[in-house]
Length: 113
Length: 111
Image (cartoon, rainbow over all chains, first blue to last red; front, side):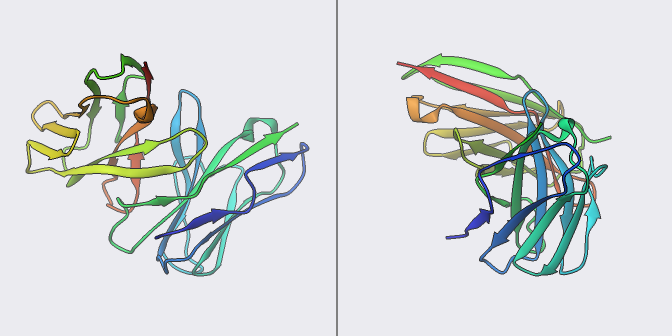
């Protein structure tokens, strides 16, 4: 079974803090994705990566950066957290060429106060 | 740009059929997908349909595709309380590298 794990289920941070969200997958997938999920807005793609050290901006990259130093790990970084980044963050992975069949982690609910 | 639209809520009684509808804009999508998100969990791929098909059936699930109207639907027969979840319609982006999700339909099943 594919397993995608995220470092925290719940996280509370203060405005201006630097925040790291970690995602690890154990199926040797090339593609990894970060989304945020907000009520009434669905899932919006922040960044994705199709290989180590490669990254592509999604629909809403502003205020975020990512890091992919190892194939299994994809990190989302909030350089200076703001209250409008309070959201559910979902990580996903997929095989190369199968971006449609994404396997999702359980999500991290981030609250920025 | 690419867009996927679906209604936000659907409420049915246990044992009834549920029909969740979706419209999409990118006619070049090769596949269209339905993902399910149970409470407190991530999304999981439920089913998909190839664009040259009109219908796909998988046990209690039936997917109907109307390419002319760019309309996709998911029918769940004999809906159970365990089917309560958010259902997302999705298509691949034009580059085929990522998915574009609808806003999700929350299905509520009452006994």
